[in-house]
Image (cartoon, rainbow, N blue to C red; front, side, top):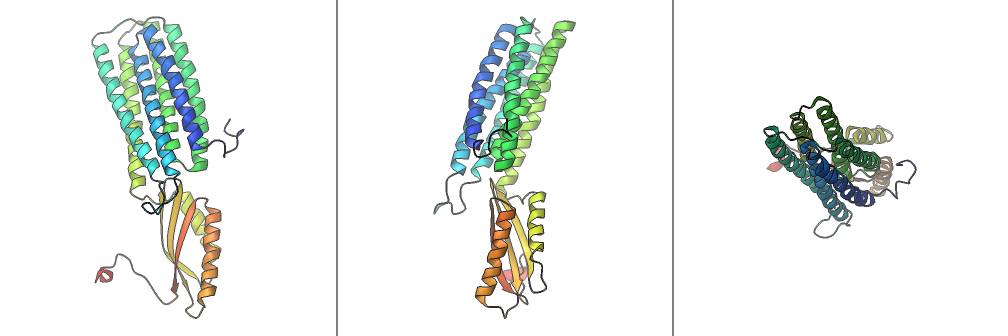
Length: 305
């Protein structure tokens, strides 16, 4: 599906709207599955889908904000809004995991028989297929649009799928063995798995808010592009990078002969900037021109005097 539809159609906003719709459908299916089976494992599955809905709505809000153009108060744009979405989703996942552990802990000491196992498992499998298909499409689009909010939502959907797989296996084992304690144990295992995913999302969000460097493959592409301009009269140094949502930024110094005219130096700089932005979509390059015999030293105590 991701390859059949053009990237311009599979925008983060459209996919997050699809995530909201799918979350409503899966909540309905999983809640019905829990109601007819009285399985705490299926209850935990339904609770995670409820988190999916809240996360998708919040992610949609943040992606909409991130698309706003730069203004006087935000001259570099609003791209970092997506990191708030990822962090918020991580917090919700952790809260859901704690709720699942609480519910499963009570059932562990008071096991209850599971009813209508076949219908419950069938509803859970259908909802998992919907989540898995949407996650596959979202992962592809997240890579294309460099959207951490879309990636976070896709990761959460994958976690939901594995949750459902674990629940289905657990309930199937209960129906075969008659060991009622397996139901809450599976639910606790599910909670620990989504807890790990929640902490991972919060970590990713924190790194983005702290101006993390660009990905290794992006840095390699930048260095490869600069190598095309390698010449004994031109030198690049003090290259620093950072990422902000869908955007990438690179700052550097470009040293040239002092005898060159300003117009000639500016023309070369323009060529380098255009090459960089063509090689890395969404990149903003800032290049400071310096004579070849001039060095700029950062993080030197003498610079502060």
